Amino acid sequence: MGEYLGRHWNLDAEVQSAIAHHHDFDEAEVSDDTGLTRMLPALVGLSDTMARMLGKGRWIADVSLFDLPACQELGIERNPSTLEFLDSIPDLVEEKAEA
Image 1: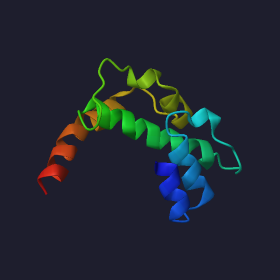
Image 2: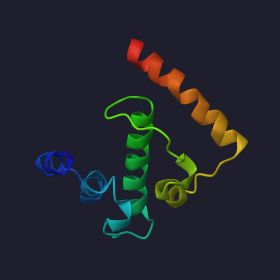
Image 3: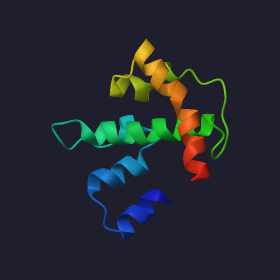
């Protein structure tokens, strides 16, 4: 559905690819030197997974976030700074929902 909407709205090819491959970013066609074509769908997929872990959409549990290929692609590592940032996300989501 997202890929269809992206085409309909004439979004950039990289954005369409990110939408289409947010569950399988490693299959996205790499067409740039920066790696954006792989990083963007990895980020979208990781965001989707995190939202689902928070109960938004189809809920999932028992996900080892740092073992996900998307985290590896994006260079997201388990360290105190990242853990602190991730711990703040549920409050941020709740604040946005109340706004």
